[in-house]
Image 1 (cartoon, protein in one colour):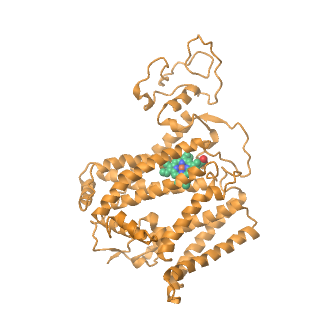
Image 2 (cartoon, rainbow, N blue to C red; image 1 turned 45 degrees about the vertical axis):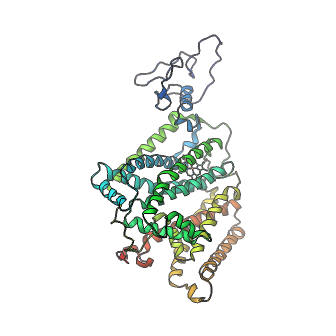
Image 3 (cartoon, helix red, strand yellow; image 1 turned 120 degrees about the vertical axis):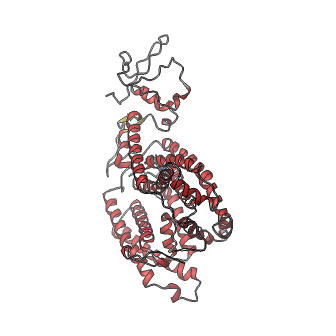
Length: 498
Ligand code: HEM
């Protein structure tokens, strides 16, 4: 086992030939059996040496140089604080998202070789891919499941960054870049959804794009531009295909590269701390090779194995060919927009699809400046009381969200009670004002009765609204049946067609 702490190499006389970098003053270690030595500096390096590892050097200096020299490993610093390697701090979620991104691009290129972006050929290509192309169904399943998993891992990564306060200065810019990455991941999934050109795709995109028309002033133009007409058609397929295979992946790769670069620019990862702990100077640092790279490799291999196993057993769904004349009942948006679709059942579309998401995104982006205090960065839930507040936020959101959905479905009838009012007020501003009054009351309780600090209240509300949105998404996916009525999942009637 080699040492991981770096010791300075004694100065050498200028005339003496330069020894191979090593931490030991004794002769440079000869490569042990089975291990290759680093290439000698005197030998010209082959052109591919920056891409393919040339064996792992025995000493720390050599390993650090290897990170600097390698075009892929170069995104890492040469050394990292040992604490940041704690799995239960990052859960490897950012790395897993990056891995999935690479996997999606590779499998996407393979799928593209057997795909024609025109209707109905796109669907026929899918049939052929599923039944006649060797490994076609498997590659499609990997692409499908990795894309869905990416939405989950990016969301959880954002949650982890929030819970550890890692968005606070100097990492504010990276947090905002992260939000852009999150939106791009949703965009990639949404545009990809239409490409198989089956019933599921056609109607989910019809429901999803219907929301765009509600954007004030420019909604109609925007919707026509994206759809290439007034409804989902072969033109939409081509537009979505172009976005899916060029604009979105290129933006994702460029922004993700900037995201990684910024992690280093912002001083590396935040350091995990126990509640109340003050970090002392001179934390132990270990070389990236092998410590970090080994963890990354093992993690990537485990997830690759899980995905391969899953994709072998569970193929990507493919329904009948898209038929604009037969709409399924219910017609649901893709699952990651189910929460938004659920909001549409309770509020006027301008409030549900435009106002609430815009305000939520703006608040999310402004978080590093609304809550900039550096003190508890690196501590999950900020403090011990923060843990209690987080639990309280989850509990309240789990109770209040379904209660409000049920009340709105069975008791409240804003439009019926105020038939002469414009619906954007009776079914938009008014219910929103009621909910806002509830938020103000609870906020005052947190501030005056529980005497919470500003950062604790930010923590509470983020967790409350995050949980509420997850509950709305679950209701949309599992509890909505024909005509978007509420059903228990075990009593769900089978879908009908309109
Ligand atoms: C494709 C999407 C994304 C990829 C591939 C990605 C990748 C990464 C990686 C590899 C890290 C290093 C630490 C870790 O694994 O947790 C990281 C850190 C970070 N990410 Fe992301 N990320 C993505 C999306 C996001 C999102 C959605 C946000 C927040 C809105 C975000 C904000 C941050 C911040 C602030 C850090 C620094 C955390 C710290 O210092 O503790 N990222 N990201």
